Amino acid sequence: MRIALLGYGKMGKMIERIALERGHEIVLVVDEANRSEVTSEQLKRVDVAIEFSAPAVAVDNYKWCFEQGVPVVSGTTGWLDRWNEVVEHCRQRKGAFFYASNFSIGVNLFFRLNKYLATLMNGFGHYKASVEETHHVHKLDAPSGTAITIAEGILEQHNGYESWQLDRGDEVAHGVLSIVAKRIGEVPGIHTVSYKSDVDEIEIRHSAFSREGFALGAVLAAEFLKGKNGVFGMEDMLQLG
Image (tube, rainbow, N blue to C red; front, top):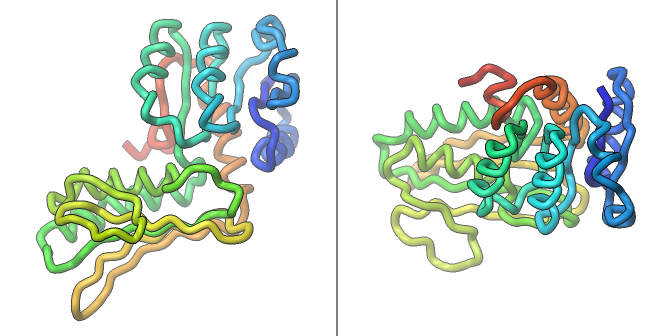
């Protein structure tokens, strides 16, 4: 495939390496330094765009691609308050969009495990649930998109929680799930779900050792998306639905 990279930070460079190893071609690289110089005609010549940029520019990037008939794979988080707008724009243009808060296969299996555990814990109100995520100091959004997906999975399956809240040291109200976000060094990503009672604690955790798993998942998603129309996610690609 002929791939455009929208965003060329650490993730973009790792995606480039893995895409080349899998026989693809990187024909366009767009970042904040050259975005104003890249033309729509250049973008039209690619088969798929892989977008790992920043929340402030992500939605504009998606719309730009849809308008040129280019499928988009994106892992940028922090823009989901505009999800409906993006999906509507994609459908109006008969485009293709693949979004994941986390492209790691292991994390997406963790999502399913999290939902199953929440279902099991639903009848045991003396256990208090919480979510904690730790990432590198360069990550702009908090909580992480992955932590939000985890929290939403708990809300979906556990009737003891109605909403989630980023822990800022305030007291958490009844029915609110707490998310603790930490930024430490160069940590690729650690996500922990805990159910704690007065007598014991149940915990599940996913720890990423490098960004390579995320990059591979993004390239696999681009391969999956080619030739399709609609909105997709990791459950579609991994057939976890």
